[in-house]
Length: 195
Length: 195
Image (cartoon, rainbow over all chains, first blue to last red; front, side, top):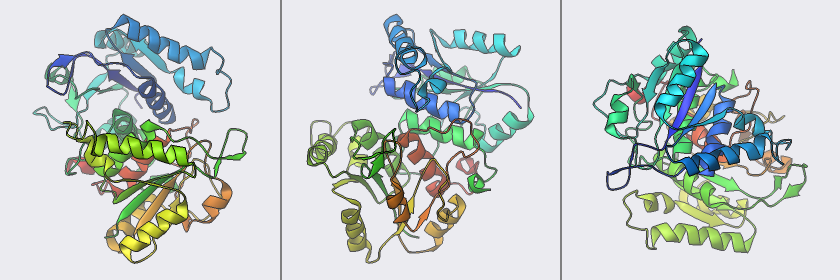
């Protein structure tokens, strides 16, 4: 059984005009995705941005819950925030994982749009996680999605979550929750939560 | 095939001490869940609060995207917000649905904790939606969860999302996304998005 890692990337992203930008980190992305990650047993959730002031803010948000006045609060939110690590770039997080695991992870992109890249199915990724010792690292984009060069640098890409929907604009918080449920949920079939 | 409705309730909820309170509406709950609802073909997303000033704010947030300066923005967020209706209480939303459908919906609660109430499985609810014409109305709580009397008033309850996880504190935004994917996703199995 391999360990699962996730990363929320803020560069290089597209803005609404398709230009490559660094997007802003948000408190709600850190909190919501940390809680989902902890629920689904994710080994580490990386918040990745090249902007030093945004890294500082992200660390401060984490510390508020893990060491600050809310560390003992009943919601146990600090337990989720402890699994958050803030990093400068993708390479730093890959080195972190390889150092922890002794092997580089399978690097998997996500996108709301179809790409020309080979897709790995949700069920296949789920099976790999359960039967293969190699860690898996899933990347989520922000803004209007990951730059093509970033997707190309990955080993594989997951298909869009709802390709046939007439509206396909999930928040990254919702998308991350759904992807985690599909690949790391405790069910074999959609009704598995009741078995 | 029945229509699916969802409601985000702010009263009667438990606070961290177990007391019954009205929780605050938040902009992010309205936005994120509206986007998830639209992606999964939900017929109407009700934001329900007894507090008049919070209803005013919720309508204003909706209007900003559906009629205001951002109505034409490329993210098409207004298309999701059009499916949001703000209401005073559960009864008002039930009357809304019965008026639209000609029949009362199957009213389904959700909870992060096991309840004594009869659970309806995700797969069973999914099957009902596809084969039965009766509308389904799923309720989500805020704060520290729905008051017991509210859960008791429902026809059924869905099981906790990850009952065996050592951490079970998903945000309501993540929980709503996962529940919608399980009961209204376009897949027959977890890998269905690729078929």
